[in-house]
Amino acid sequence: MPINTFDASEMKQNLNSYIAEINDLATSPEFVDKYAGFITAVYDLQALTNSYSVNGKAATTYKFSVVPFDANGNPVDSYTLYVSTYAAPQPEAAPLMQDVTVRWMLTDGTVLTEQTVTLTEGVPQTFQRMAFDGYEPEESTPEAITVTLAGDGSLNPGAPVFYYHIIPAAPLTQDVTVRWMLTDGTVLTEQTVTLTEGVPQTFQRLAFDGYEPEESTPETITVTLAGDGSLNPGAPVFYYHVKPAAPLTQDVTVRWMLTDGTVLTEQTVTLTEGVPQTFQRLALDGYEPYRTEEFPKWSLNLRRAECIFFGGIPIAYPLTALAFSVANKDTSFVQNLAIACSVSAAIALIDYIIGVVNET
Image (cartoon, rainbow, N blue to C red):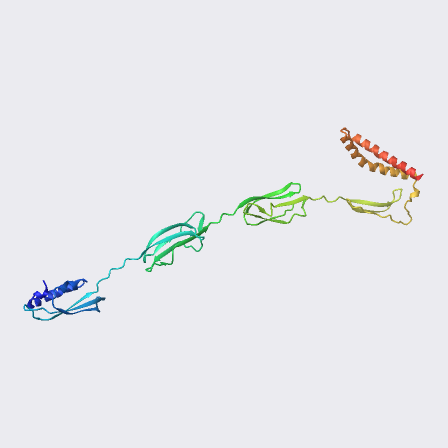
């Protein structure tokens, strides 16, 4: 019932209850509109915003000057009503939400996989680094990335991206045989080793009794296995040859003696195979060497024939054996020797005849 229908006494009696009701409903933002219809004579309505605080919150003070009328329409009394309330509560804004794409990708931009998730403002979310066959993470890529969506829609510390690269292929390995061998292909020794691509390996020249390395054989050979399986500079091989036997040496006694066997002096020297050595005739007091004219002519011719005969046998024998072999005739050693002696004797005889003819 509107207030203006009450007389003054009723207004006085019910004023406190209205004030209590208004105070009870003061927290509603609609109370002004609701009670405005009950008051027919209202003036000096003021809203004093933030004039003071209630329980630490800003309050709004409403001042009502209420004038009730009597039955004749005359103002009876005047009441001033102050009502304080909290400011109308503002509804909290819903937190910002945003879809974010998490990527696990190569440094060249190739995406290995990705995942779209919805982030809520102020709520941090952590993403884990994944494992992929054939790929490994960059050193700078952490195991986990935590991202928070800010109120302005930005991401802190940034868009979550995990970077990877292709795992390098395992280096090529290959068994290689190192050989120390003769130039005729005979292997003195060998060793099989496993080479790794790109890793040079050095092998040493070895020493072997009775053999010596070729002049072109280096002391070391360094070999590197290439990615295509080839060897640079090539297969490691050290070449040798048979060491020549030491030349024969022999002690020989040189004598200066009489024809009756008396030794006037002698000297022992060591001769080396293939190395000629010259000795000089000595002059000895009371002795002189034989002169050519002191020997009979026939003895000199005989000596010459002897040298030709025995010197020709070593030459005639292999030639005789070769001749019969070519002719496919089987002959014995004695037969070949007899023929060789005959040939040598014939040569000595021919030499003698030529010498006699030349003298005449």
